[in-house]
Amino acid sequence: MKPVTVSIDVPQTPEQVYGFLDVMAHHQRFTDHYLTGWRYSGPSRGVGACATVTAALGGTKTEVSIEVVETEVPRRIVERNVSAAGRRLAHGTYTIEPLRTGGAHIAFTYTWVRAPLADRLLAPVVRATMRRANRTVMRRLATELARHVSANRS
Image: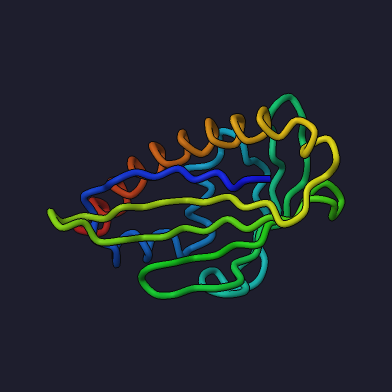
């Protein structure tokens, strides 16, 4: 299946964006419209940070295990996602680039490594559903970043 990428530009610096995204618990704040029941394990940030969530998309619910497997401060965070009883394996990659005008460009790419037959048969629908959900994630991330940075200045 082809990957799905969504992006947004924000006024925060790449370092501020990375610092926020690096903390696994912060992800709940901008993904809880479709990822619920967050349970954390491992370190709170960086490689090895883990969460188990329930994903509700396209009329189905599934448990998803998320683990940070690679980081490149302050440019990239790669998460491994396992769901559908191990039949679905994917990577979620955040890339953070500085903007010439200040701020940062954040892109999130969801890449399927292995997908159940139903996902593959319905690939256009599955990809559209993921794209729609992750566009919402990006808008909510921008809002939460602004709150977080503002709160830390106070």
